[in-house]
Image 1 (cartoon, rainbow, N blue to C red):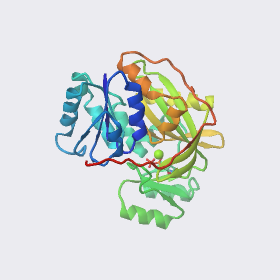
Image 2: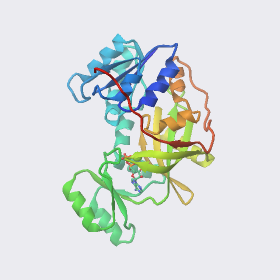
Image 3: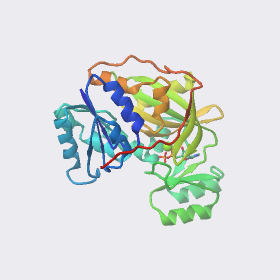
Image 4: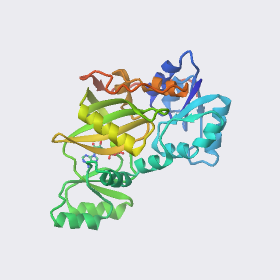
Length: 321
Ligand SMILES: Nc1ncnc2c1ncn2[C@@H]1O[C@H](COP(=O)(O)OP(=O)(O)O)[C@@H](O)[C@H]1O
Ligand SMILES: [Mg+2]
């Protein structure tokens, strides 16, 4: 049984963990749009592919799946998640399972404003948000909103284009220069990350790992520590089941005065997943079990508290690419 990781990029650990899990079972194949994506060199074999927007891209991936007898496929980048979900049946027809959520959920998760509206409608605490700056200004005048606020692209990722804003002039300036911006009230609290696996067979939430973020750098968690709170596990389980996510997801949450606010979801392995794996939440094995047709047993919070993660740099040296 072979596995395919699309857009492996710099996620070397994720590739290594899959290789460990699939050892004796099959091989791990990776792709990237660049020969300088270091993680592909940690796979058993790799393909350099065109950009996901190139004509015929998905047929090329389907061909790789056929040729390599791929049982399961996933992508590590946001823009590819909806594309895979959209083509799920084509993959299924050649015996390849797409590990991921539905097209609709992928689309909603990539749009922070749609996510906000969903959370609000379903009664979850979340940061109040506006796409319409005039509505936001009215809320400020009415005393319902105040500065600072976060202004960010509703479709953004990796903290690109995120601004903490202290006045109306700056809101106007940012809106004059960019479309698709969202204004969000400032969440003054402890940032939390959750790595969650939703069983592809039973649909149950089978694993949750939560960490407090200690330090962020370039849009990623740089230092974090694991912790557990049954109230948070219950909230995550309820939210994930109600929304209907599948496979691996990563959730951003804020703890403000003891109340949990859901911020956003990335329906894929997040950059901080190695923390969860090293602390005992091996989701690669959960995926392998699902591909074998076995549902996983629910085992939420199967890790120790007080496990710290500190990122540091590594280099990959390859000759003659
Ligand atoms: N409303 C907010 N209040 C406080 N911090 C925020 C807010 N919005 C964003 N941030 C900070 O910016 C980071 C990135 O924002 P996020 O909405 O998660 O976008 P993405 O991760 O997709 O770039 C967050 O992890 C947090 O540190
Ligand atoms: Mg985020």
